[in-house]
Image (cartoon, rainbow, N blue to C red; front, side, top):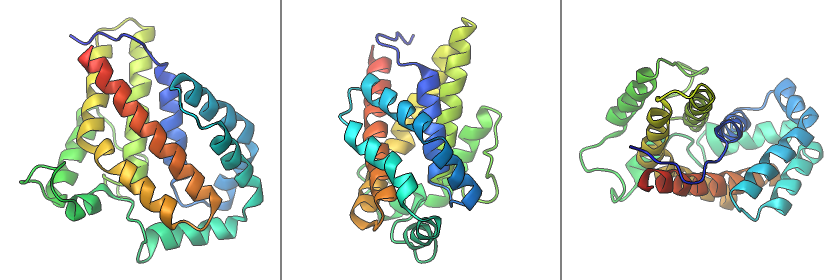
Length: 225
């Protein structure tokens, strides 16, 4: 049985994951303008997350939010293509990191195709298909972050309704984190931090890396408890 010692609002975590998922998409002008219009909301969300998780990110978050107004959409789009798309500086799919890893974290018998099938089965177990299903591989950064958003949201709904399934959703988050996100997202973010020319992506990756790493510790401590 899972015993939660210090609960972090699952809706807060879900909202953070959802915003990260969309921020790592290719930014069409309407989408980026939406983030500009919501910059105060995003600032409050990320700062609330940082406070709850004791992450010293106040200045980083404020600089990131301010970068939304300073950067040109054309520069964001060009940087996205350079970093993630055409001959990417940083691949945005987990299977790339599986192929390039030393296999210390991944089991010897895994291969990229098998891992993608396993992730699809994981999604299917919870009856969902990601919004960009078919457009992006199942192990794309935006898809995996969106899935964590879904699991956190389901945890919140189960808690509100006092359903026993809350333990199932916590266990699913912990498993997906340990088997996937924590094995590659921090490294993915480090590559961006060292390669991006725009503050927008450097700061976004720094915030993401800190949040995912701390969330992994949170989920691990909950399961251990």
